[in-house]
Length: 378
Image (cartoon, rainbow, N blue to C red):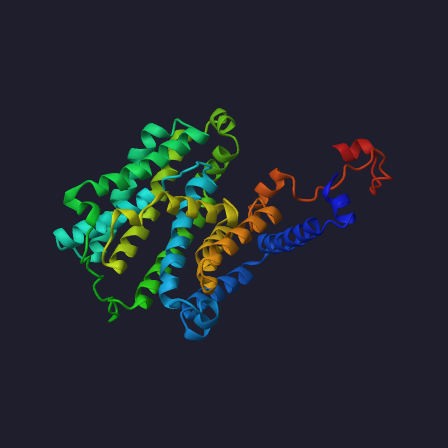
C-alpha cells in the first residue's frame, strides 16, 4: 500500500505526516530558488532576531521557568555550535562520530590549564585551544578512518571515554576535582566579561555566525563535493579519483576545531570544569540534534539543535514529566519526518520521499509532446 492510498483510507498519522512533509519541502524548495536579495534579507532578519533574543519579553514566553539569557548561552548556543561542527563530520562527510564530546572537553581543559597555570589570557588560549583540538582530530582520525560504519562509531566512542577518564585520573589537570577559577575573557570594546551571560551569548553568537559562513563556503567548494561523494558511496568516490582518506581526515580536523572553539568559550564562562561535564550522553544528544534537523543541511541542523536544547527547559514546569514529553515529541517527529526537519534536497531524493514525475507514454501525442517518440527519447 503506497502513501497516497493510505491517505485516501483516512490514516490520520499519514495525513499529518504528508502535511508536515509538504510544508517543509515547500519552504526548502523556495529557499533553493530564492533570489539573492531574498536570502540576504532572511539572513539579516535572523541575525537581528538573534541579537534581540535575550530581551525579557521574549524570555517570559520562551523560558518562563529558567533564566533565558543564561539558557541562550548554554545549552542553546553551545548545542548549536557543537551541532554545526558535528554536521561537518556526520552530515557532510558521512562519518559516524560518537565521541565528539572529546574535542569539546579538550578545548575546555586547554582554557582551564593555560588560564590557571600559565596565566594566559582568553584570546591567546582560544587560538591554542583550536590548534590543539585540531591536532587531536588528526591523531584520532589517522589510525581510525580506515574503518567504516559501526566500527568507526565504536572507536570514536572509546576516544571520548578515554579523554574523560584520562582527565579524571590526571592530577596535573585536577583529577576528579576538576579545575576552578578559570579566568574570564579580557574586556573588548569596553564590554566586561564576568558573571553576566549576555556578553558570552553575543561572543558565542559571533562564533556561530563565522563558523556557519565557513561551513557553508566549504559545502559549496570542491571539498564539500568530495565529502558528499564519500557520504553517498565511498567506494565509488575512490574509483573516481577522490582521495577519500585525506578528505575524511580533513572533516575530522575541521569538526575538532569547532568543538574546541566551543569548549574554550564555555569553560571561560562556567569558571570551573570537572570530568563529569563531558559524558557520552552529550555526544549522543548533539548527534540527535543533527539527525532531527536533517543531517547534512545546515539550517536544519541549527533548528534541530535549538529544539533539543530548548524544549526540555520550556517544559521544566512539568517537573519529571518534561523528559517524557520531550521524548514523545522526538518520537512523533521521527514518525512524521524520519529524514529530519529540513533534509538536503539530494538526500530527500535518495529516500524516495519526493514526488517523481510519472514515465511518459511512448507516443508523442499521448505524452503531451508533439515531437515523435524517437526525438523525445533523444
